[in-house]
Image (cartoon, one colour):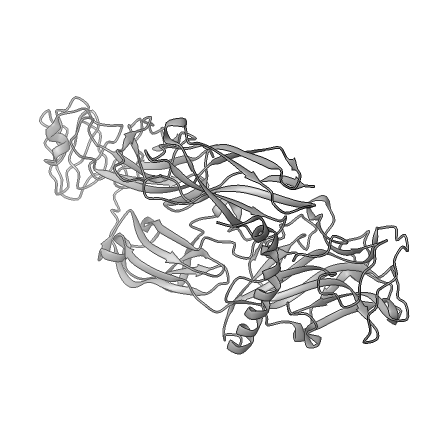
Length: 629
């Protein structure tokens, strides 16, 4: 549990924590041969709007201001309000925006676009100033750079009307790098070691006696650690001889920039590069660099952990033995080997409609083709590929003695085959695993082919989903059919939960077992709806929370939810635990009474954590703002 006072005080620990981390990094020193990647903040170098991930504003006096106007074409503003008294060298009377790299990473280089002014001026004892620093601790002279003090005749730097003007561009010096932190600050500084205050009431046009605004940042973060890999499986890893579409599956994790790419090399040359999980567009190289490094909009752009299962088309390789190297990279470019082995590729060279080297015609009424090389047919006459005997739509043909033929059902599709190759992927998301928000539209699609690559058209594909909770039972989804090119697709219900999607093809309708199957994994963040009334309250006033879980089934005992609060831009803090009721559609209610006086602005949300009996990943509600007067 957390009290109202703890919520209000939570932001005060940010600078202290940052200082401790700085000391730890300084002792450890930068790691050698670290990988690197760019992160754009507020603006990209081309002028596009970017998030401000990694930037935060510590708690400050009500007479100071930290405002994020990046989405509206502005920047991150740190200002001291004009018309107020600002005490010199006051730790609480200072406006700051600070950046912190993910744990274990350092800032290798940085280019900033900024402007600022000290319109409030100075007097005999104190002066307004702004500065930038590579360290989160106060007064670290070795880390301070780009200082502008009114007492030194510096009234402004850069242009506030032209964000990417050349005069706004600032390359951070080496002395301020190789730490996880950057900060921009406005302050009233004392000239003498006496109690003092800066001038007030200068009626500055922008409303600030001193201000600095960050319009954009191009930060290069370095990471020494490489991804970890485990549970390697799949035909590419296990089979000495491969053909058609083979796969490699493994678990990958990376606590820094995240799991980014999987690279396939054959005989020393890159043949395929795949981003297995774009994470809704976060894990996407937005480009714009000149040093060959990738660029992202988030400090940890890619997933911290993934279950990867990727197909690999061996028909693009010549038959014979090849050296295969499969590597997984994090966003910083650090690589870990998944596979390093020799494989033998053995694909049939017989085209669709061809005849096997030693087979018989297979067009008799008894379906008399041989497994060794007879022609396979549809309607008892046409041929398909070597090594598969014919089957007829009427069921009179043989399927090589398989159980599918024994079932006696009609062939499932034109060019139906017991050796069919079935693929299944998430549309727009390479790989077998997909994660995302509740209620999003998702499409699974694939391709069905006979040996040699001939499409199997007008075939039924079975799709079922198994929710991810104890005791769940798989349920069938609508059955898609393949088109003339053998391709198929299915749009999933918007209420789908986390779980497995199982896709299968039976060469004959009614056959007891499929001849080809694939499994996809879906991770869905829990959906929560939150309402709060009233949105403006007073000290000792009450606000009422109400909402519901959007997905089910809800466990019989209800589903636990955590109510969290923060000051805008601060860290989320837990203050109460409630339950969504199973018999009431996952609905919940709660009343909270303020005990300390305002004015304070708060943001609230409901967090739904993962549990074994609820088939959704961690998710949170919409954020609701409340003002306590």
